[in-house]
Length: 264
Image (tube, rainbow, N blue to C red):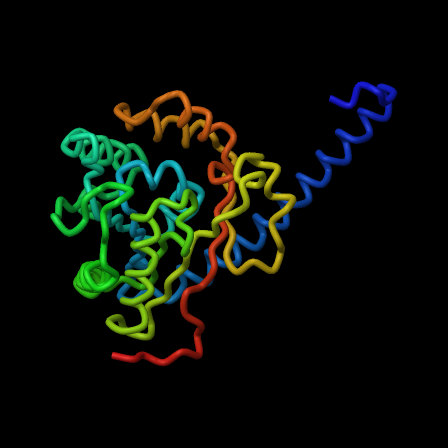
């Protein structure tokens, strides 16, 4: 590590890092709870807010969005719209079943999970998903289920996968052209490579001003969820779950400001 330093200085460095991490955790947790209260307030008829997570493939929810889901699962009704079965390796039926198992393990309602097998949305680095098709699909689901807020990828899609990026552009198009102005939407922040793989330490480097933050320090839940995706749980994904900042923290930016007006 820092072997040229005396032991007491090494201990001092570690203590400073630990204190910075704890302070960042408390700061981020407080901000998270404030946003959760705001997001879930105002449900009508004694019900709960209807939230929608839109992803591209089975396992996206476990690799990237679990801090969001774990923080809100008991405070709102979460819907999951997965636009493909992840059939690139002809494992679509298996991956669809794996996603259903994860959704159940997270104690979500089974009828709030929808996994599409649509020729327009085929898994692949070279598959083109048009923003018009994605927008129409998302808007239809959101309108039919009276969705209050949508969560999805940002313009880089965390990993740069073109299907993730297509989902972002489609949701953004739906938000600005096909959904009521009352519907909010949030995009998961993609970070630099070094921040992506420093795990919980990334809480220290997360700006307090970032719009929406969720923290979760139950990495075993992420590992267990990802393990249910048996067909995908290869060695590098095991390492990803352990070292990824997305196991511990999700930061989102709002896709539409409160002042924007409905276009259609």
